[in-house]
Amino acid sequence: MRHSASAFGFADDFLYSVSIVSGITCAVLAVAKFMLGRVLTSRALITDGFNSIVGSIMGFSILISAEVYKDHVDVWFLDGTLGVLIGLIIMAYGVKLLVDMVPRVRQTRNYERFE
Image (cartoon, rainbow, N blue to C red; front, side):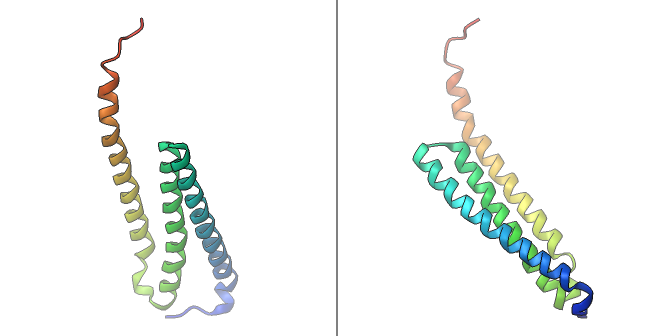
């Protein structure tokens, strides 16, 4: 089932333009953040670069799922499924960051406490 162009033309154009601009902008920001994070040895900046990559993927996934939905209405769940997968990826990266921080926290316990 295909929708008529006149009913959804403006909404489709707006969705496509916002998704493309968002995806490209987030990808460019991710590259810049990764490069600066490596030069400055900033873990927070590298993590923010990862978040920008995820934002870029999210922008393009909206575009892809809207395009697929146009021709195949029976995959209405694609956008939500991609959102859940992106959320799981972010959660896995957060768990990785927490696990990486455990040795640092243990190391700081050996310092004298100033009271």
